[in-house]
Length: 169
Length: 285
Image (cartoon, rainbow over all chains, first blue to last red; front, side, top):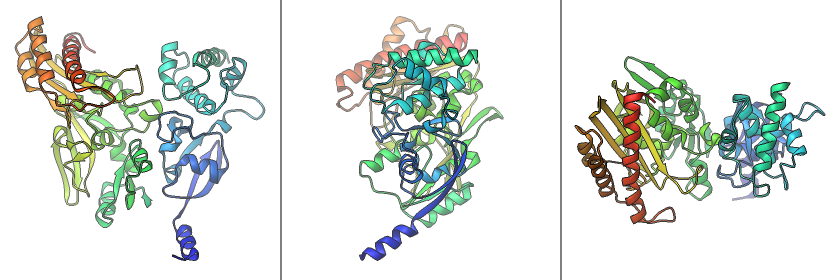
């Protein structure tokens, strides 16, 4: 197969996707087999979501789709059509960090940081649904996110602190 | 590979009929890892989640109807459903993390064909039915008849499950699902056991016992059911349930558990699930 033909086939198989990402209307081109994670990183330029395992075990790629926490590595990019996606880039309000981001920083709830965007979004989804979770509920709620650095305790405490702050807000 | 998102059952039917080698999917939580590990790509990926009927949970005319692609989180959060079928809700709720729960579905969990599928034993114990869209209409089969072996189903290539039907549980009925994994979350069943009991006072009047992860498909245990019916769940009955459950096992030996371990644990879980189901039948979930 000539290079020219290969390129034209690739071009033909590109799909146009329209969606809302962090409040902004976004459109991007992708192939149908591309994951939403890869499309976010490579086509949209949002690299907050990370690939850890690529099989839905580690949660580093977590994003909110229509407000629900999901692994973007397990979503085909064209599925995003018409959906509202929130990535970690959408959590802060301008220069003001989200309370979870602030308590993660203050409580040193991260070391290498690869898992952090996923934890922040999973914690946000948890607190949006359950503003006053018990420690057990937090641990189960974050069971889909793996961290190899912190041993989790600081993450749990940061979520508890953020829950208190959000309640007072 | 092309992606298609039909909005009606008929449109999905046509896509499958016109494109041999295509595959339907809901959450893709099994499909994408399988594709990454080298399984051949389907010709057309047919996303069922834009079909309203497949994403709905409803109750009426003495039964529950659950769209096959509905996220299991929608089921476990449905208080009325979980109140009537706590065991089904428990099983469905054990499929992975919150991230997975927002994608995983009863249809996908069943048709993936894993012997360890957590939502399947309690569905079978409740005599749930699958409504299947075929090229020329629909047919309804017992959930127990859908999976024929690991990764294998009785569905034709152009068929897919539209919804599940579960008749309302009779009065004084309770169900329970227990799963053994070596940690507390995020693992695949070494053994799963679902029991559903109907009670008249202290006496069992109807019983279903179904095991997962101990045979090529989920298996019903008629000998355990026979031991339960008419009993008052005394120690001899529970010992008989346990023995019958172990005897029904035909497991594999793998990293998750040896044949001996799975066989013994199946007996323990069946007995414990029976006690929980009886309590729920008598006192509510």
